[in-house]
Each structure stands twice: as structure tokens, then as C-alpha cells.
Length: 340
Ligand code: KG4
Image 1 (cartoon, protein in one colour):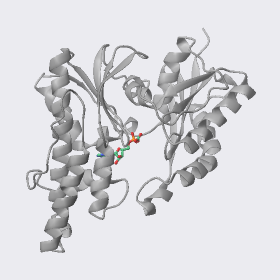
Image 2 (cartoon, rainbow, N blue to C red):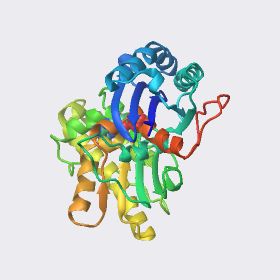
Image 3 (cartoon, helix red, strand yellow):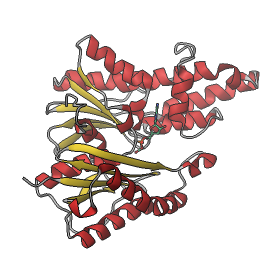
Image 4 (cartoon, rainbow, N blue to C red):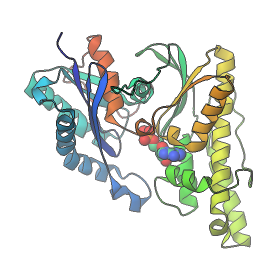
């Protein structure tokens, strides 16, 4: 039987990534991250698009070479069609469409958020991992999203809760910015929190009905707390960096896990996964491991390398769509905003 080889392309934000999957197994995953945004404290869309232009050809070339295949072996190209930054998406989508025309192969479009969830199905030869059985719950937490999703199949996903204002990652990034730390704040807060006392400070938690999240109150409470303490002691942040990071991290993780636990109880679904950039967070991963150990949940945590944006997850999602014959017309445009 002929191999099914999918080239995945991801360019929705500030990572240019390409990956090759053969018959459901990952052969290569190459990501060019953009450092240019660090000095601005956030992603600058115009600079991101330009960097994608520079990175796309070498990144795809490296993924194909590392996989040990030829371009002509590719069965289909899968790319992130959205949501994301329009200028960034256009680079990956246009490149993918052009490649499909030149190779005479189909295009498969992937929703970036579904890609994050399907990262749980990425397999590598010799390193096979258990995958969640359907249906399962997935906490999808990234820079732009905080959602609780019932995953019924590879393509049937229902959002039962989402943030009504800021996302968890965005909140951590902004609080890190208030503290004068670098960008993105998530990994910095995570590192600092490991040396701090998570019970040192208390910040306000939201009381939102149902399974929705809200993080804007926490962000404001953190900002006002810093402002008041700095008025008394200008060195307050510097002297309490680690405790602030640990207390902030604890609050975010408690808010995320409390709602997720409520969703587990209400749905009766005890297979629970976490996905998206914030799933790299140490305290959040530990909270999942603790529930697995106490047999409260069957917990699924993605390997560290597949938490933030990557093309392996796009190639994986594309592989399932390809098998279903679910192809994308070449005149379908990228989209910047949409739910799963
Ligand atoms: O999924 P992602 O790479 O991009 C999208 O937003 O789609 O997520 C990026 C987010 C950022 O807010 C970043 O600060 C956060 O994930 N993040 C973390 C950690 N690593 C990345 N947040 C907390 N702890 C981390 N270790």
C-alpha cells in the first residue's frame, strides 16, 4: 500500500513551522521562532508576517530533508487556515496552495485550535504513547484562548466553556509585563515561580456561572496590588519577584482546574486532556499529574515540545482529514477569528 505522507505548515502567529507525518507517525518537525518581538513586549503583526516570509522556504525545506523524503512523495499539504494573525496566516496558506498546485496534490485546511487538541495523537516510532479515547474533555489554554471542549471525534468538538474576556496565557503575559519581565511572560513566570512561595499573596478569583472563564478581574487585581505596594516600597517587585510569580501562577491554575473539575462532574467524562501554550506550565502539569495519581481523572498531558505552536499537530490533524477525503478548495481564504 502506498504511504500517506502529509506536510503540515503552521504560521498563525509568530512561529513558522513545518512537519512531515507518514502513515500517522511523525518524521520531522522544524520550527523557526521569531525573537524580533521580544523588545516590543508582544507580537508585532507586520514584523511577524515579514519573518514568516523569510522563514517559510528554509523551514519547509529542512522538514522535508530531515524526514528523508522527496517533495514529490507528499500526498497532501495541510496548513493552518485560521484563527490567527491574518498577515501571518496568508504566508503559510499561500505557500501551501502554491505547493499543492506545483505538486498536483490536495490541500487540507486545519483549524489551529483543533490542531492543538489533536497534538495528543502525535506518535513517534519507538516512542508510542497512550492516546485519549473519545469522548474526552480538553482544557485548551493558549495566549488567545481558554476553553473547555468536549472532543467527540477527530472533527466533532463542542466548546462548553470559554473565557468571556482575557485568556489565561494573555493574563500571565500581561502580569509579567506589569512586573517589568520579558516577553512572553509564561515561561518566565514559570521559572520564577519554582523559587517562590505560592501562598505568599492572594489575588481575586472570578465567580462566573457555568463553565466559562474570566481573567480580567485577576489581571486588574494584580495590577492594583503592585501599584499599592510599590507606593509603599519602590523595590517591592524586585524583592518579591518569585513569590509574586508563584502566587499568580497558583491563582491561574486554581481557576482553570476548578472549572474543569466542575465540567468533569457535570459531564461524567473522566478522560481529561490539556493543550495549548499554557499546558507547558509546570504547576498546571503537576495539577493534572496529581489528579491522575489520585485516580480522579485519566489525565493526558502533551509532550512539552507540542504544547506551543508547532506544525506536527497541524500535520496530524491534516492526516485524519486526508483519510476522510476532506480537502480544501484552493480559493478558500484564511480566517482570523473563529471558534472551533
Ligand atoms: O499556544 P501558544 O503557543 O500560542 C497561541 O496563543 O496560540 O500559547 C502561547 C501562550 C503565551 O501566552 C505564553 O506565555 C504561554 O502560552 N506559555 C506559558 C508557558 N509557556 C508558554 N504559560 C505558562 N507557563 C509556561 N511554561
